[in-house]
Image (cartoon, rainbow over all chains, first blue to last red; front, side):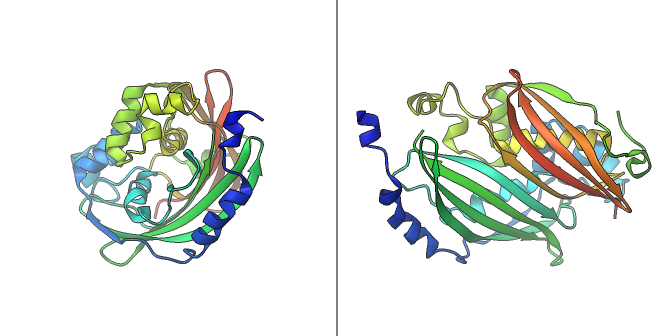
Length: 164
Length: 137
């Protein structure tokens, strides 16, 4: 057996970690509340290649259907790091983690000037055997709402930890 | 090509115009700043080489943002609202050319469902997803 295989975590090694993580299911992470600045929305739109005036042109958007610049479709992802910090953990005997999937239901759009509040819930942790070793999946769900209490989004994010 | 009325124009099987773009490391840095996403897989080249990868990995959310742009270029936010979306990342995406496309799956009263994909320059499917559009509120 190669040395690299000797030091890789096995499913049996990981089971206590999964058991520990599963006690977190239902736990709510730190809440976030952020006033949405025009500049942040424009910067995000530029970084994702968006050119529609409703995403980047304050004057044009003010005359448009939303009365202000709105967030590009995936802007809701920018709340994940803060709301999921300390909730999902990558302090595991596995050296790599990657993002696996997302599922999002959108409510009212995020408009410049809104105050968006959110929190995330630890949803799931489980092990699967992959081709090159065990895979440890974690899932969190985030909800976002605006200053009027209107639902902005529900965002479900999946991640996998493994040894490459 | 933008549709003035996607709910009248859409038909099952319609393929939206693809987009292809170079997503280089600078684009990843810009996205990291814009999205407040500082996960090291996206910028720490020595770490990723040590882990056995050929390069840093692009943000999944960035590839999906470009997949969504195929939809919003055709059905802009004044013409249609994205009500829900889902994406699955199949392979890590390294800096290089990213090509994205979408196909209309079904058109119902006040709803268009689409399938989306992103491919690397060598044709590898990096991510697949879905978007549901509704008329503007």
